[in-house]
Image (cartoon, rainbow, N blue to C red; front, side, top):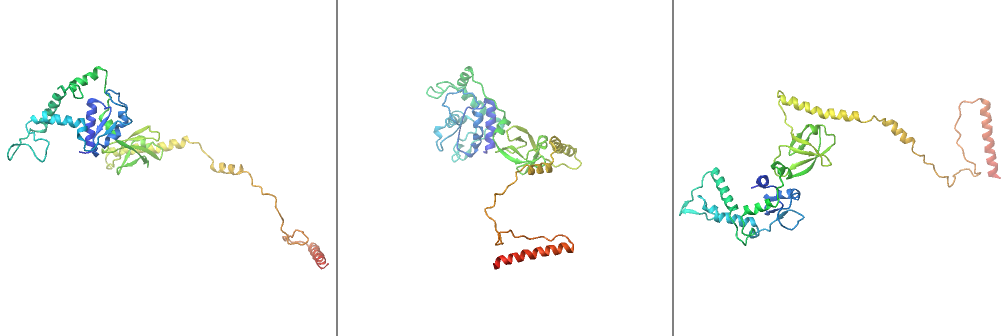
Length: 331
C-alpha cells in the first residue's frame, strides 16, 4: 500500500466523519502524507478531551503495538466478529486455518459479498457496549458519539479533492511563453498566458499524478488552474482554439507596453551626466623647472607663415635671450 492509497481512504473517512482533531499514525512510509495535514487539523473545533499540542500528528513508537488503541480494536474485531465469517483463515499467514487436514477453507465469496458483511460486523461493534473499565466507561461507540452530538459537536468538513491538494509542495517554476514545465510536461492556462512575471509558484502533489495544477503568485494569491499543454493535429479544431488562447499572452504584452510611459533614455543619461559635480584638483605642492633662472621653460609652437621681417625679429630675440643666458653662466 502506498501513500496515495492511504490518502484516498483517509479522504473518504473525512467525507463521512469530518477532519480529525489529531492523527496517531504508525511509522511506516505510507503514512508520510499526514505531515501535510497538520495545519488543516489545527482548524478543527476541539470536541474530545486531551492536552493541547503544537503538532496534531503523533507518531507511534516502533514495535509497540499494545500502545495503539486501533490495534486493540482490530484484535477485538478479528476474534469476536470476523472469525465467525465463512472463509476466515486467521491472521497468521504462516499457519493458515484449515477446515480439515490438507483442505483449505472455502472462500467467503466475491468482493461484492465481503463489503456488506464487514460493514455489518463493524455496525454491530459500534452498537455493542464496552466494558466499564474501558475508555468508553461501559458505553458503546455509538452511544458515546451521540453524547458528543448532543453536546453540540459538529464536524469540520473537507472535500476529497481538497485533501489531495493539501498533500502537495509549493515549487517555483519559470514562465516561458505563457507555459511552465512540471514532471516533464508543459502546462498552461489563459491566466498563465497573460501572466507577466518570470516566476510563478505551483502546488505540485507529493504522491498523486496531477491532472491540473494550482498556480500562485509570489504573495500566495491564486493565479489560475493549469492543464497539460496538448499538441493537436493540424486538422483538429481544438488546435485553432488553443492557438487563439495563445494570443492572450501577446495581447497582454502589448497592453503592458502601452501602459508604460515613453522614456527618452539618451536625454536622461545626458542630464544625469550634466548634473554631476566637477572634480577640482588641489593646489600644486611644488613646481618642477629646468631653467636655473627659475624662468619657466617654454616649448613654442610654430606659428603660421610670417613675413621675412617678423622672422628676423623673432630670430634676433632668440639670439639675445641665448647671449643673456651665456653671460649669466660665464659671469
